[in-house]
View 1 (spheres, rainbow, N blue to C red):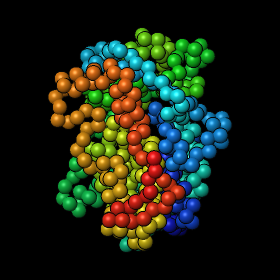
View 2: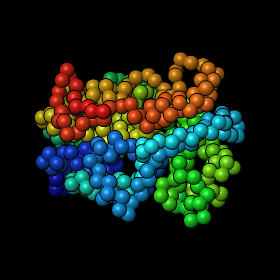
View 3: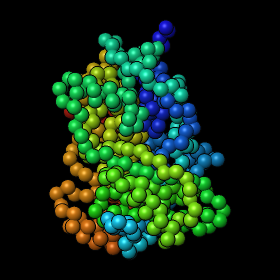
View 4: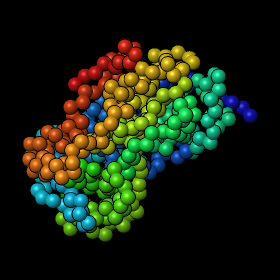
Length: 405
């Protein structure tokens, strides 16, 4: 059986994988991307990107928006959901407006395909990972692909992440530490002209008053995405239907949406137990458990970790052992707070009744809703952007990329 060798192999063609592959390819490495799906493919995701993501990707907006959804967002409608059986909305319903777009709606069906096609790497779409074998000189994937370094960017259930968990358990004698997994369920449907006229343009956000999650209704071009994400997923389908009924009753969502609800899972960065490195192996994006601790947003962490993974590989030499890759782990911890013990929006030490009281106070204040809930928690506007043109260096055991605001 013929074996093809690459300088690096990336598992997963989403934003983390395509971003990492593009950086490695641009630096002259021979790279391939494996993904079991054929692109374009449907991807369960609310689908919004901030201006920081556009900068990180060096995205040609004029080119991207030709024939693709690119919905400017200049306002949000926010309110609380109770934890009652009906999960009805709690007033007030605030509308927060911005003078310029603070985010942009995209469809992952289009977005991921665009990024993957432009990355320049060899693409092996429709090729699932059936075997991973560690060798002295690196990795053998599916018995036919050899590489000294592997990037696992295949989402929460990435084969590389599962391999690393088993290897860690074997090496330490302990299983992977269990932390709460956030589950999301949603639908994305095309709207008729009549339904478009019935659907407000500003995204609708409904936060649970115990700050355990939130629901949304998000119009993007002629499509509508409605979904719900929570740490406690035991009644998620019922709660999602209750949310949909509530939004319909408030005339925020048109009646008669019949698309199936589809789910996915992810780990929040501040509670993820996953180690992101092994010998010749780095994890990025949801495979490393990097979703934002407050919003659950995963696109920006995926892209940043893909850039950081590529910078680490380019700053390191074969054999890419665990010690050499340690700066990547340290950088993710510094950047995203990975491995800490927080629980997202809800402070862990506060009783639920106090959290609910605080949430009601915050969400009734237009100023706090704008500056705390939206700007900080939801949009992450306080976080400095990575300057991808500033180069990378190793300092104090950590990879440093110049930051800019």
